Amino acid sequence: MSKDTIIRKILPKEYSFMEDIMYEVIYHPDPRNPYPKDIIYLPQVRVYWDIGEKGMTTIAWWKPHRE
Image (cartoon, rainbow, N blue to C red; front, side, top):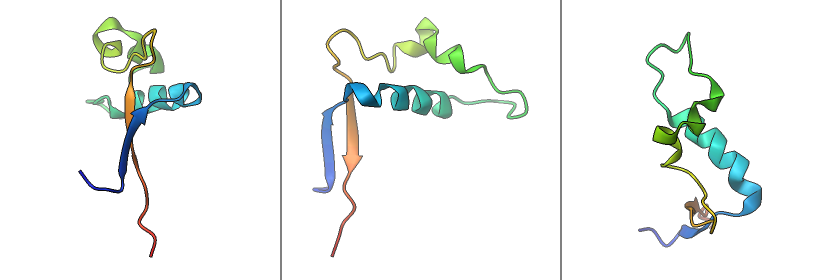
């Protein structure tokens, strides 16, 4: 892993961002007919991103290299 990558717990203010990202990464076989946004709340999908009671979801954050 690069020294410019930070792994940390997700912050409460970032939860909505996680929901947006999860929707964007779902494969849509027909882009003209996308799934509804609430698809991310189906149990089969939510298991991959649910924050849970303890907020244990982590995110990787890349720090841009500055010279």
